Amino acid sequence: GCLSMYFGNTFFNSKILFLSVGVSFALIKLSVYSLIGEITNNAKDHTSFMSSIEGFFMVGIASAYFIFPAFYSKTNPDAWLNVYLVLAILIAVSFFFLLFSNINIENSEVKVTTFSEDFSQMMGLIILPLVLVFLASAFFFVMIEQGIMTWLPRFNEKIFLFSETLSVQMASILAISLAGFPVTIA
Image (cartoon, rainbow, N blue to C red; front, side, top):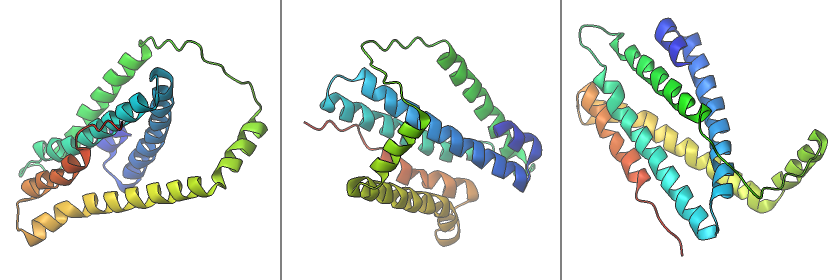
């Protein structure tokens, strides 16, 4: 997706980028959350580690507010596309580390089921009121968060009359504040 955006720079390539980011995000988040359950010993460790990972994720989002403006150029309007080469390299390095990571999960019992059994169990979970409230809350939180984070740089530029670069960098304050500090719940 990053390479298609760098070489393409069209609306179609933007859709490819968003599709690849969305699918990757879902798969990575599911994988990481599943792994957390395997490597933590109790609910306190689980909560603490989840909080740390979420905080680190928000630091990553905040860093985007500095990485993209670093590639802005007044003489070359397409200079910002170079950030996608850097991101593609980072993704390749991350994939390389993941490929050679040795994650041993011992004492794990895997129950062999069919797709239809898994699907029916999943549908049974979806109709639980607590799961519905969680899904709705997660959806609205992400929708509001992304809406504000997308709109905030333009707001800073038009209302506060910041430069384009500074308006994007100032929007990082929201992401940094959402990162917070890891919280351990006793």
